[in-house]
Length: 320
Image (cartoon, rainbow, N blue to C red):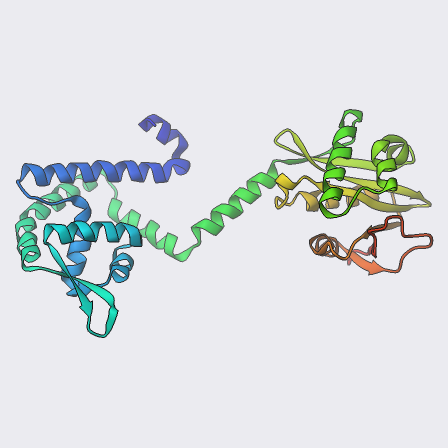
């Protein structure tokens, strides 16, 4: 990836840019050590200095101290042990705990490195000044922001919002009849089975739903039909929500909620007087969704029990 590409991507490529800069800095520092005749690696700096400052540290304590992962610290500590710069001993208070401490050879290495590090610090300050920004302070502030927030949760929430923004609700078109059928059959086979009434309605959505004054809507995500819901016209202003299904692959994106809200809006547009639905008590997630949008449990209407799976009836009673 070129610098131009990184600049165009900006925030999206921030981690890549930091990794690129880190690799570049480590490579330069390692070359400095080599040219100065010092056997040392840039990745050893923080662990060795931390161990020297504390006297002794466990792997876990060292990882927490400098903010590296446990496996990374384990790898570096093995290198430092092999180089003779640190030693390993058993914690007198806990025989299962291993402590790392600096060796006399390590202390000598620190003395050798002092003028090298002074030169590196001087050059770093010069380069920071050329940037006209306190780069170190900015990075420390960003680190504090990471500590105070939850980067994973916030990122996943942003992704969810962006995905939901891509969900479109569209009306029924004859070419979508096959999607209406397939989505519902997939859902029915997952939780129940396809009953004769299901087959009758799904196989002929226009004469069964559209022509009597009902409606069918679909959720489209990135050009793909991923969900559907129907509004049945039972006459005299009485409507029923039916045949709501979201394909397995795209569940969890809030598609069901968008469909439900859209079909309720369609009910209002038709000046409906009553809105019912029938469901199964085993569908706890769906029931919670219905309740959150204004549905309450109600007695079965006369002549109910359309489907074998139906054992719960709900009516739309918005609070406002």
